[in-house]
Every structure is written in structure tokens, then in C-alpha cells.
Length: 114
Image (cartoon, rainbow, N blue to C red; front, top):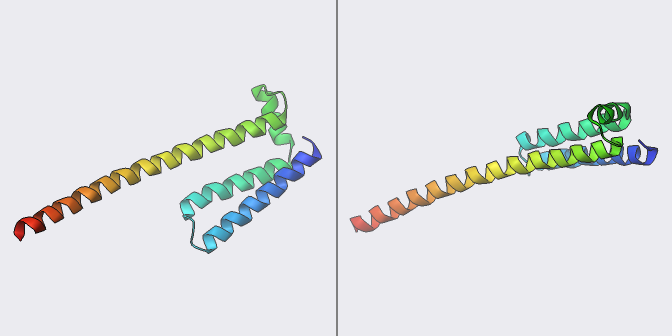
């Protein structure tokens, strides 16, 4: 891994970590989601400080370079986050549907009583 790429990942991981901590402090971010991002920033910091780790994995998995492995890891992480967000959206839609049904029943009963 080149020194420029290594520095980029160190800076990116520190910025991500600080950004997530700032969001938690302002109570604008869920702690359960923040833990995932904090762990991701720490993992990125570790692999940028010790480039032998992604190099070893990239050789074992057959990647042409460790940079390709890291970018593939980013894409995989984003897919996981996308799946997690879709699951949360689905759960919120279901909750919304239930609330609308309960409100409709309540309004129907109040109109019927009048």
C-alpha cells in the first residue's frame, strides 16, 4: 500500500470517528448505529497503520492489490449498511401502517358514537 493511500485512510478513519462522536454528543444519532461506524473507523485505522493485514488478506483471497481488497471491503460494508437501513425502513412502514389502522378505528368509533 502506498504511503499516500495509507495517509488517506488514517485521515478518513479519524474524521469518521470524530464525526460520529460529535453526532452522538448532539443526540442526533442512535448509539446502536454509531457503534458500527466507530468499529468501522477503528478497523480502517488499524489496517491503515498496519498495511500488512490487508496485504495478507488480499493475497489469500486473490486480489491484484491491497487497495482493491480495501475498496471491495468498503463496498461490502456499504451493502451491509444498506440492508440494515432497508430492514429499519420496512419495520417503520409496518409500524406506520398499524398506527394508521388504529387511528382509523378510533376515528370510526368516535364518529359512530356521535
